[in-house]
Amino acid sequence: MRALIVYESMFGNTAVVAEAIADGLRPSCEVELCPIADAVNRPPPQVDLLIVGGPTHAFGLSRLATRQDAAHRTQTSIETEIGIREWLDAALPIPTPRRAAAFGTKVARPPWLPGSAAKGIGKRLRALGYQLAAAPADFHVTAMTGPLAPGERDRATAWATQLATTHPDLPKTAQ
Image (tube, rainbow, N blue to C red):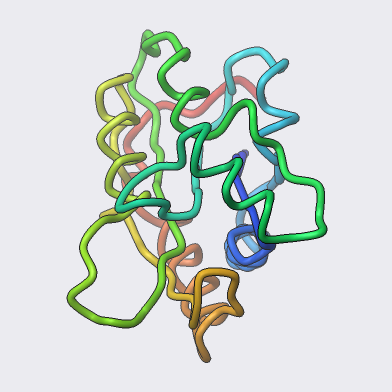
């Protein structure tokens, strides 16, 4: 089985979760990690499992303004022109069902804080014709810039291990 993980990361936390997900998939999948800046110029993914993730900004998927704000909060170079929202909105519907999964990072406290990039990603993936292999998953950070909350990297790996074994009845891509 082949899996592609496309992710957007501002402060490195979503990238760490993407790597943990890759670790959980590797025993049963060929896995490729793809930052959003690299995904933009690629053809549509022809994989058995597409996993898409991004940080929660202003209660949902990042926008140009929220990415620009994030860029001012770090010394690291951040892709501000395109994010997961724009990438998915520009994607064409798929002709046959494929499995997909959505994940996001969000601040753990306060626990009542609404919003989830994962839920927005999941909604867009379903609209494109993907079947979600699991409910969208949020992984928590301790503050806006991180780090991940204790145990979240392990939880992401475990989540991915479960993804590798769900919905085996969907068609596989040509090997």
